[in-house]
Image (cartoon, rainbow, N blue to C red; front, side, top):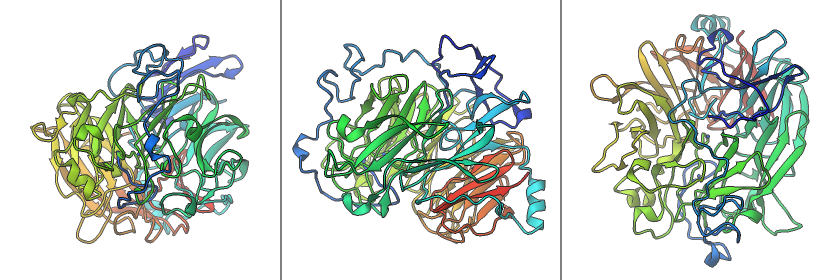
Length: 605
């Protein structure tokens, strides 16, 4: 549960606010006569890696000071490689003193944050991170998004962008948009981050740019050990802390006054004006960390007043890169950063959806190991891991990891298990009922019991396994939804002989847990690393399930299909400039898609 401000009264509403068109809304409201004030709330989540942008090969390059690249910790931090915060007391486990004892299990009311009260008494909608919430389910609830309404739009010529909504932005956009209703002077606000290190607050109705935070020029790609983005700035999806009125982003900047190489810098920006409230230069803070080799592709996550930031490598997996996870307690930022570092090079966390959380633990899916690692626990590569959110430590116990006996082969073949991240959901009758689904470059789907991850596949297989759900790499993010017909998971990967890339699995606990292929259809793009990260809309949480894909790298159109049959319901006109793995955002009767230089808005309501 969220850490709460003791001076701020909290009202907790029930798990379902369907009448207000919210998705499993986790509501933490601070109500005072003057309106909403700050309280701590939760909404909330690159080993060997890949990269900013796709598959990779291994390079043996090293940093000039590679001999001193131990995890290390500040002199006052104890001796643990977990990166203990200076104020963490005497434990080498790196436990935060304010960690508390959050509840276990996936909160039934997890979902977008309700950020306050509207003048008409309604609840403010806030989409604060990649995938809507920490489960990374990418499930949106909006009463306007009925199948009948969408079919009527298709009959009238399909979705067309709002011509009055035409913001001009600078830089490529890989990050998903974020949204805050009534966020600035009574206006609904979209937040967009770009590779130019620019962050924009945009009026979600008019398309007017309300403010721009220019954090510094993007960095030329030739300053990194490898990679395939020509100008690197902000690649990952930021996180929005409504209670603190802060937007947290990670930029990549030149710092010529102090370094000949670029650095990754964490910024806490004010929501009202985009001004910098605090910043942390990671390269100057974490021993052995270098932005030259450490990529930050994966989305940020907010849990219990801490922002978690995963890292991996760049396209090409060059040099010394580790699957770091940084934790920044917002109550003390910029002080108090703590971190997890795998014991060996690689084990990147690089999928766009990043970490996931059930409200207590963090879950990471890692990529390839790098270097010569004789045993799996020397690197923690190609695995599904549970990390302690309070200390950012990994227990090493079988209950806290799922890994493969042929992990060395996976690494040598660049078959990252973590290329698609994970999605968390509950499934009664399947083990504990608390499950996760993973699909990586191995082309298979794995249903895992979160209560006991099980250790190695042999002799402890997961709840269910379905081979060949993809003919090539699964990458981007996933989405999950439940209807009267059962539980489904959508993913992006070539999933049939036609090269179609929008796949949907059905997950069942009837009899023995199972995963089956529901359908595989076109989203207007073919081949690995093309297409978007799928999202799902429903009108009330279970009805009118529609799966949305983006034809990035293909026709660049939106494709919406029936969540039960895969039949096309509506498509859009082309959106020049969309990039692969882009995830649309749905809010208040509209669907928004970021692209290079602009954002497209399609009005459904």
